[in-house]
Amino acid sequence: MNADLVVDVQGLNKHFGPRHVVKDFSLQVRRGEIFGFLGPNGSGKTTSIRMLCGLLTPDSGSGTCLGHDVIRETASIKREVGYMTQRFSLWEDLTIAENLDFVARMYGMRLRRKVVDDAIDALGLGSRRNQLAGSLSGGWKQRMALAACMLHQPKLLLLDEPTAGVDPKARRDFWEEIHKLAATGISVLVSTHYMDEAERCHRLAYIAYGALLTSGTVDEVVAQQALATWTVSGPDLPQLQVALEKLGGVADVTQFGNALHVTGTDADALDRATAALRASGPQRWERSTATLEDVFIHLMRDTKDNYQ
Image (cartoon, rainbow, N blue to C red; front, side):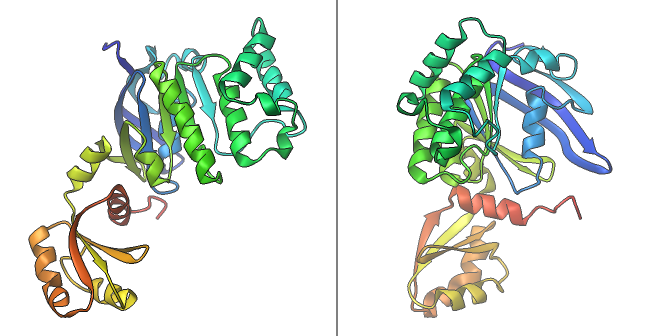
């Protein structure tokens, strides 16, 4: 076993009744790596992450997490994992300090007051330690939740859409904390729908309805799809979008602010399909590089919901 690999799994499968929600899932995550999971709602992201971290037992497959077998040693894995859910799940009628002290008591920690004080200092919660959790903004609740899941000093963090409903500054501050933790050797698995957050991850995996479609760095994921792209600006973009969507050779047309991204899987076919519109229209056409969001939209449109 490679000691640098925190997660090393092959062929994981999970069914819920007749639904095959995760299919032959294989992945490796290194120590100190921030690994992002992208994909449509209901695509199996959370189920996949929970299987990796011992929170859900696979039906089949094999592998290890933190050196423990993901099927036979799930209890050992859970002791070394910090789990932060999308929904705030601490006690709103307790203060920050009381919440963290309660969690520390559940873990049976020695010197828990020092542990709580250290966590409050590390996450910059000192000025609000005596404020009721229910009166905190989303960003402060998020910081408290991160402090709670770090109390037992986990080696692996599981973050399930942790910044949903949080303002942009609080999201940025949160990600700075995550990168600080990763720099100390803690590995992070995070699911997100925000493209700017996905680009902050060291590597990504795109999961669609149970299947892992692609993985790698942001640049690798974009390059693997080899999307040819034009950016179009100028007047009458809604009408142009309707016309473009009828053309063969055009895979996707998406509006980004005051411009359209026109993408295709074959550069020559895309150029031929759009040649007349480029020559005759009042818009400005520029060749551009596909973004991660272009890739996300393209992959999402090419996958079929396994509820159907």
